[in-house]
Amino acid sequence: MLPLLLFFAFVSCVVSTPAGKSLADLKIVGGEDIDITEAPYQVSLVRRGRHACGGAIIDDDIVLTAAHCVSGSSPYEFQVRAGSSYSYGGGHLYPVGDILWNPNFNYRNMDHDIAILWMSRPFNFSDSIAPVELMKTHEEIDDGDLTMVTGWGNIFENGGYPSTLQRVFVPKMNTKACDAAYKPVYTITSRMLCAGTEEGGKDACQGDSGGPLVYNNKLAGIVSWGLGCARPEYPGVYSKISELRPWIDRNMFNLRLRHSVRFP
Image 1: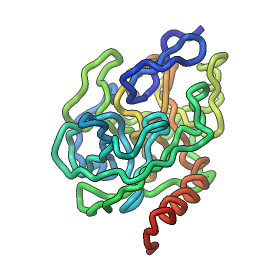
Image 2: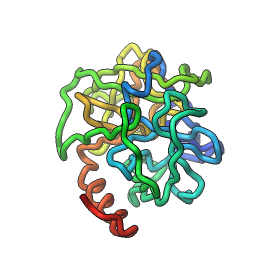
Image 3: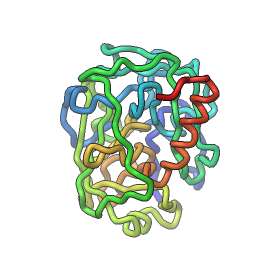
Image 4: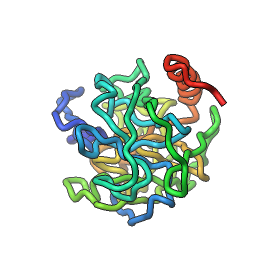
């Protein structure tokens, strides 16, 4: 049986999961400080005045995050802080007008861990607030290629939240090897992407949930779950944008239609 599984979730309460495991809100381990202008798509999802999760701007009224950050919640509980290198202040706060999480998501397997936030006020783009391009449907990353993860989560597994935005570069891991590492309790599905090093030491962690994993300046993944943080042989697991792209495109349209937003 796997030891305690720390999911990259924001929830402050403990949620029961299979095999007696628990959810805890997952930071960048082994990373470095950066300015928001180096990842202007990065946002902080603020819940009741506190940083809860990360997110990625993909259009002037749309943010992607993890379903486990928002499922079962009202949009009125959240704001998005954009344009700041700090999770606790600065930049601009934007109200979340609506939330749509993938209906196939559940905590038992963490599959389909993706959600769309519609902003009731559009972003004002600048050097510090800008969208990131999405990977195309079925577009792949070669094993071993470096990806970049950013966020404000723990700098080590049991605590130590940073004040400044962090980034770390981690190689994409072979899916079969990742699946073997997590079996028999968890399965890496086609909608998941693994990134990390065999020796550990670099990873996303608590507080990074919902944040972006970027490859060649394209959004490739959303921070989802993992076993602890930066542990050897256990890579971080991300929602795979290229496999979830059809759902994202379709439901961006539906959200805008629901709110009668004019299309460009």
